[in-house]
Image (cartoon, rainbow, N blue to C red):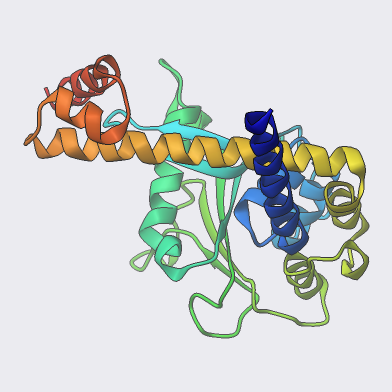
Length: 273
């Protein structure tokens, strides 16, 4: 009976913690954006249409929290990946400057190219790829709402036209225009304050509707569990790479089984060969 009571108290504590998180969530929080935009084509059409100045865009697919791993084992988890007949769109929330470096954007583009490539495929068949970083601060500090980058050749005074487009959106921008209102919406915690209906409806569902709140609580629990598992695996990989401890010792420190550590070690050694 005491154990049941303690379990109920722990469940209630976690519920209250999750409710507090939900009340403070904004689209500028990557986990919340991923949940709100999952399979939400109307909101994604609105967001991409404004950022890319393509008001008629109609995405055919929206996925969130997509893991992409390269041949060397380095992986990224995409906040949002969408596609339409014209290309592939990766939209990321970058709240800290450290995570918004241009070379990270380059890495995202290279992994998406690898993901889109099939054996025997002509390189000309690679889709147009858009890497969009929505940064909480003005990363380049020039006051512009959007910064667009494409590879450029000085000698011919023209673009390379390789299909890679890197776009930074200034989350601080508050102009009285579409992108200004969109960034306003990304910073709102209350659905009533949001300008764009497609976005407001989804946020209201997850913050005010009983079913939506329960779904959000489950998602938070799953994300916390997945984050803990990822951190554990990364900790084990680093200890394996250091090559100073036995598998049994790494298992003891990480909480993994010896079999799991041995499998990780085999994968790492295999990639080095």
